[in-house]
Amino acid sequence: MATVSKSAMQVKRLSDTELQITRELDAPREIVFKALTDPTLLPKWWGPRRYKTVVDTMDVRPGGKWRMRNIAADGGEHAFRGEFREVTPPERIVWTFEYEPLAGHISVETMTLTERDGRTLLTVRDAFSSKEDLDGMLQSGMESGAAESYERLDELLADLEKKSA
Amino acid sequence: MNANATFSALAEPNRLQIVELLRRRPLPVGQIAERLRMGQPQVSKHLRVLSEAGLVRVTPLAQQRIYALRPEPLKELDIWLEKYRRTWGDRFDRLDEVLSELTAKQGKSSRENKRDGHRE
Image (cartoon, rainbow over all chains, first blue to last red):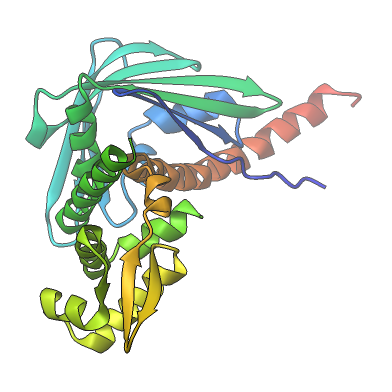
């Protein structure tokens, strides 16, 4: 039987400012690399489903710029940009990531592709310059109402931690 | 306790408000409704969800039912990690779709290559 079990994604917090996600994908890494970098394929998966994703720039080479926008049905936009630091097909991509309204808060995202038996293990490592940057990024993709709830929840949790300490 | 159930229970702003209120001290339904300016039936409905998620417990006291916060499930919840997980989870689900389209195309041609290359 050619049943391919969908592998679970794993998220690990490496430190206050670093996160790592791993996920197995059912394709050889050449194909995964293409999906990660091809401007015609990126809009099909990179943005949240409720947004339309537009690629303005995708210059896939060291020093090359990239820019993408998530456009909501009501016309609201979220723009993201950055620069490629390393491009090694089909095994490694390093790019910087910046949410334009929070310009200057730059994170570095390293994607590593490892192939085994025709499947690819994708590891994404996100390094932020501060914990505040990390929180800001997480809110950028959210509707403001939800983001506000999350902030309040964060406070609630911090408070509970204090009490139990 | 399942982090997802906790998360869903708290995703509703009114329920989050109730949890915030109960953090200070346990209260009967009537007072929760009054302080949050919500209808009592509405508050009861939210309290039921919170109770099912293990976030509140009820203690009868005379004619009243007193609701208190159970912080245990909250402590297990790591909010921003959960947000991050959701963003990437959605991305990967869509990436799976893109990859299966791409491998379907490629699979056809590589099968043909194999047939040509081996024992034929």
